[in-house]
Length: 117
Length: 110
Image 1 (cartoon, chains in turn purple, yellow):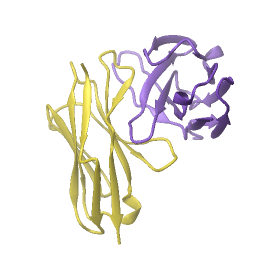
Image 2 (cartoon, rainbow over the protein chains, first blue to last red; image 1 turned 180 degrees about the vertical axis):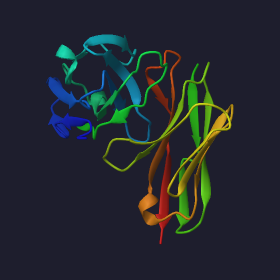
Image 3 (cartoon, helix red, strand yellow; image 1 turned 135 degrees about the horizontal axis):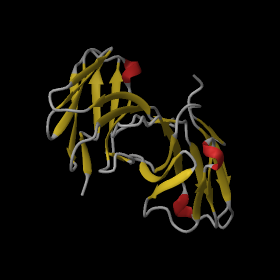
Image 4 (spheres, one colour; image 1 turned 30 degrees about the vertical axis):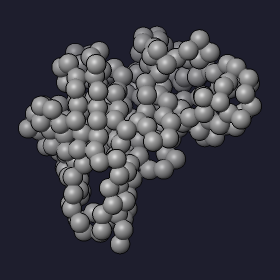
């Protein structure tokens, strides 16, 4: 069991640049989530995928943010025209949603720390 | 609005000094309450899921309990390696996104 992996682990960029993060979920998991966490706060939900379909987006996900999960495997989160307020830890989680159940257990990756200068 | 509140924000204990962390929640139809541990600079690590009032789960020195309005994480005879931030979360009404509290940062000194 390799767990959820995320790359890169750290990213420093200048304001206005675009950045892309990658998440590789646990292999048999059909759901993939993205969260953002700032210092002293709990993670905040951004968006989630059921297989390759993006089913829910938070109001936190502005037009500058886009996420994809081609073929229902890995996912990417892109931030365009980064702002200093985008500085945060970006966390990916995956889960196995079984038919007939209304809940799942989400397993988190190590996160990508973004610093926007 | 669904909400999770954790207290205290920070807790300092001596090794062996037992205590409890509190998680109060407001949600329409609980679909699961989750406890995670987070070490600095790392992602949350899953500890427990509780689904109904009266349920209890244990793992080593940790024991989680659930009532209709709150959950407690009891730490018995803690060790320095238990130092971390403990996060509580509930599912949203759709059973998808997790709604987290701000966490309790536990420091255990020897």
